[in-house]
Length: 362
Image (cartoon, rainbow, N blue to C red):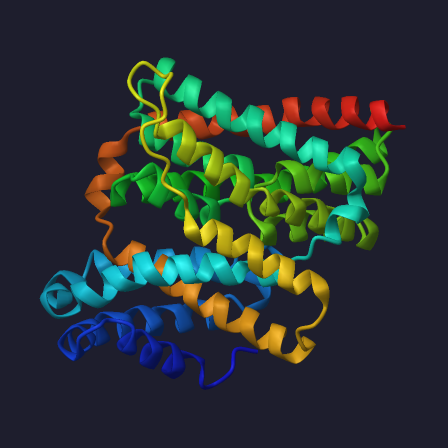
């Protein structure tokens, strides 16, 4: 359960972060609004049907933010804009750093080198396909294609938000990317278990629950969706799926650093002019490393994770508040078409990668 003091403590901390008291006063209304929407999303995500179907607080937060953003927020924007921007940018980076508390380096041992290789190949091939097909086949701008690719290849909405400071997309581009990965991640959450049970009834492939869990963890978008798809088969599948997914999440930091280096190259593609180091990604790895030592008290880690959920939900709510439905409508079918292509690749190509690497390490 989220501690009762969480929203107040985050708002007060947010108010202290700006250097001048005037900035703090200007930022407080928008930060409070984002916190209110975040708490509503977290409480709403506890409803049984939403929990059973893997629809988490981050998804609800952006939905609630968009609902308010396209109704009453335009009248509140002059008062709230500073705080909403603060939540969307600085609190997001803080949330990504604290996300490292959800995993340890020891998680790698549970899936072995084969599992790490599967995750790495799925990630790189999916993002490469998104970048190439998005710009060449679908005529999308580079930022939108890469944001959709980041969400599809790593960890859904959280990866989109983490990659945005490196890719530097516009608000509507970020929201389009988040929307596409939510749509197809939700579809995967229902489709994967259905196909597994269908294969049990009419055997075509020999797939154990553990192999299914590795497949689900390496190809489904969001952590909550992976958990739901895995547990829909059995506990063994669910545990393997979550571990595989968290190893994939751990690859977020090196992915962002490599991406930052690639995007900093000159027009001729040969000389690196300036590499923007995503400090929050380094912080993510550092926190995961500290958590791996086991020195942090369990109760403190659990509370910090709950607070981090509030922080990330605030960032999602702030994104929703600054997103207009008209921007989504003008995006057209091309982003959805790219996300559908990546979804098909994750199922078919990801399955082939799982089978090939597993055979190599057997």
